[in-house]
Every structure is written in C-alpha cells, then in structure tokens.
Image 1 (cartoon, rainbow over the protein chains, first blue to last red):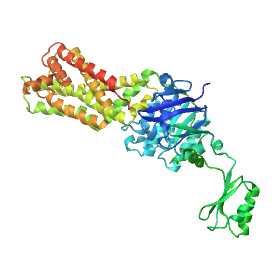
Image 2 (cartoon, chains in turn red, brown; image 1 turned 90 degrees about the horizontal axis):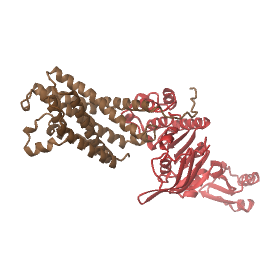
Image 3 (cartoon, chains in turn blue, orange; image 1 turned 180 degrees about the vertical axis):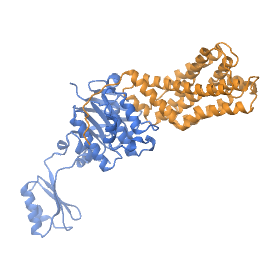
Image 4 (cartoon, one colour; image 1 turned 30 degrees about the horizontal axis):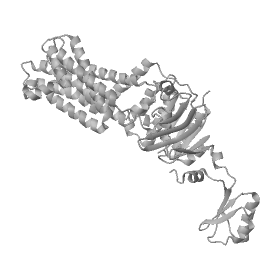
Length: 305
Length: 255
C-alpha cells in the first residue's frame, strides 16, 4: 500500500516570496505527524499542496498514491480537511445543519448528533455559525473534516484558540482517530502539542524541513542537565572540582544553578553532597533532558509562539 | 459517552444526491436570509401592490397591473440571478466556503449546477408569488408560456454571468455595494416600473439594451401585447450571457 503522504523536493513560490523550498516529507499510514514551526514557516502551503489547492512550482506530491491536482476527484472523497481558523463554513448555516449537510455528500458518514456531542457543540449546534466563538468554529471545522470518515485528515492548526480543556479533548479525539487507523497530518506552532500528540514531528522553518523524527529521537542526546535553586552567588569552584571534567556548572540566573554533562547517579550524588556540605537545600532539584523547545530554538533560532 | 468509531469508510455520495442536497441546502439558507428576502420577495410584492393601487407613473396606455407584472417579473429575475447570487457568492468566496467545498467530494461542476438550480427554485417561488398577486389584482396575462419561459431563462443566464463575474473578481464588500447599486439603478431605469418613453431618448436607448430593460420589454411584449417570441430581446440577453459567462470563466477567482 502506498504511503499516506510522499513529498519530494517540493518548492512553492508566491511572486517573489518562496514559501517552501525543496521540502521532503513522508507520512506513514496510521500515524500522527505534526508540522511544527513558526508562523510563515511554510506549513500551510505544504498542506495546501497536499490537498490540491496549490500547484507546486517543482517537486512532487503524492497523497494516498495520487497526484492531488490530477487525481483530485478520486482523492477528495478519501481525505478530510480543516482550514486554518476554521475557515470555509457557511456563516448563515447552523453548526449542526452544516455538518449534516456535509455528511450527505459522503457515502457512509459518521452519526452527526454523536459527533456534534463529542466535540462539545451540543447547544452551539443550533446557533448560526456567524454567531459562534472562534473556538466553537474551530470545532465545527474539525467535525466537518471528520464526518466523511476519511482515511487521512489534514488539520491546519486544529487547536488554535481552544481553551486548555477543549484542547485536551481534541488531542484525545485525535488519539482515537489514530487508534482506528486514520492518518493525521496537522500543523501547529505549539511545541507541547507536537510533543505529546505525534508519532513524528517535522520541524519546518523558512520553507525548509530542518529536523524530522519522533519527539524522543529529536530530544535525545548524550548531554543532560541537573538544575536546582539555592542562595545566589554561591562559590562554585569547589563543586566544579568535585564534578567529572566533562561537566560544567553555571549560575544561569541569580540563584538558579545548572550542571551540564553526562548525568549519572554518581554525579547527582556529588551535587547533593556538595549542597549538604554547604548547608544548602537544592530546591526544585530536577534532572532534565533537552526539551523539544530547546531543539526548536537551536534549529530555528526563534521561538514558535 | 460511548466512544464513536472513526474506522475509515471513505467515499462520496451518488452525484444526484450531492446535487439535491447542495441545492436544498443553499435554497434553505437563502430563504432564511432576511436581507435577501427583502430583495427577492418584499420589494417586488410591495411595488406591485402599491403601484397598482396608486397611479404614481403613467403606464404607457396599458392597464396598470398589466404593465407592472411583466416589469416586476424582470425585477425578480434580476434580484435573484444577479443581486442575490452576486452577494452570496462574494461572501462565500470571502469566507473560504468555496475553497472548503473544493476539497469536499462535490465536483466543481455540480456546485455550479446546484447554484443554477437554486436560482431557478427561488425564481419559481417568485413567479408564483408575483403572478398570484397579479391575478388577484386583476392581471390578464396573454401570449405563449413558452416564450415567457425562454425569456426568463435567457435573463437568468445573462444576470448569473454578470453576478459571478463580480463575485469572483471584486472584494465581497465591493460586490455588495455594486450589486445593490445596479439593482436600484435598473429598478428605476430598466423599464421595470417606469415606461421607457418617459425617459430622455438617449437614456431610453441605453436602458433598452441592459439585461433588465431587454427582459422587461420582452416580457411586456408577450404578456401585455400577446406578441410572439421577442427575438431582439432574447438576442440582447444571449449576448450578455455570452460576455458575462465567458468573462466569469476567465477571471473568476475561487479565493
């Protein structure tokens, strides 16, 4: 069976602006893949090339083995699409009415009342879309993407503007989709979303793919940290001498200390004994690996949000 | 709550069902829209009732109601196939509705055909409403119903081409303003309620070749004079259709 998505050397320009440059990406079936990157990184353009809105200037895009531009009529019934900011909903339609309408365009759609309830749109279902809040509109757009029981969904920032509780609920729903064998491709600039949700993260910046892997692979490295807080301006020379040569210790902010190196139980014991000898309680002692945020920052030189 | 299944079962509905559901849906939205109803139902009905009762304008030697019904029928076609279609499509484009539908299983030709069918359904309701009110007010229609149908369809195509051209090229707000302005101008100048012979000669000549002028004139020559198919007016409407639809096909932007 073909892969869900295969993009090779995709380049897309708008006038003088190059939105995507030589991007390669494959998505395996039944996985959740996040395109993570700051605004303007090329995430939306990539998705729009996958669903057939845009013609690539060069490179190839195959979705479920089909060319989205040439085989659009065969591809469209098999995918679900959610546009950014929940765009594309008839403003004069009631939410549930619109979802029911879209359901009738499909062969064996989901049960609309159940879906509406699942997305917490029970009451809002009877309200005209123009009077819904941004978050409610997002959920209507998500329901619209799912109602046809697609094999593959493209969700452009599915949780933007949702409150934390609703965001959790959407994450749960996306987990259900994966468990049932649906492939999910989403864009996000929320690092924790990409980290907690995805099998695969593709970090995109300035139109290029800069890193690719599972959250674990992306954050894996030999070096980790021990962090704690204590009184400011402690003399660290004696601790430096007690630690292995390969490690370093710094006061990153007044009273915040960071030991970097290969963190072993022995190293941790060295740090705590040193604290005990100086009668310092190492508050908030934490052994950490690099976070996905550190990775993104390192690769792109900027924060995504 | 029991967890619902999302096990994929993709596929589109049969095309006839997509067509009927899309047409029903769009018709329902239009009938619910207050501004659109004002344009398509309230204004024509009020004008017909008011101007039949009160002699505001001279009616070129016809019975007032016999003169007015053909003009008001032309107005209803303009209100639905031009003003209402332009505004609705302009805002659908603005809100990304057309873009969103482009990734649904509904083929583009089926979307356009649904819009055409929606216009025809609304027009059928309008003709019933205006015709029914006219008959109640003593209207005595003449001529061939086939000639009337040919005029209504030619008029619809002429207006729809221009509506799609505007909606697909201008911003939604500009479409809204322009569509209402054209509606108002052609209501006054398009032979709807004021006979052409009451306008200055140069203006009457120009008004006669507008889609509204040609449609009103053609409908009046059949329904009021009992004439045959008015080929001159059908020719004018067909020319507008050709220009409007070709330009819309060339320049319409989906987003």
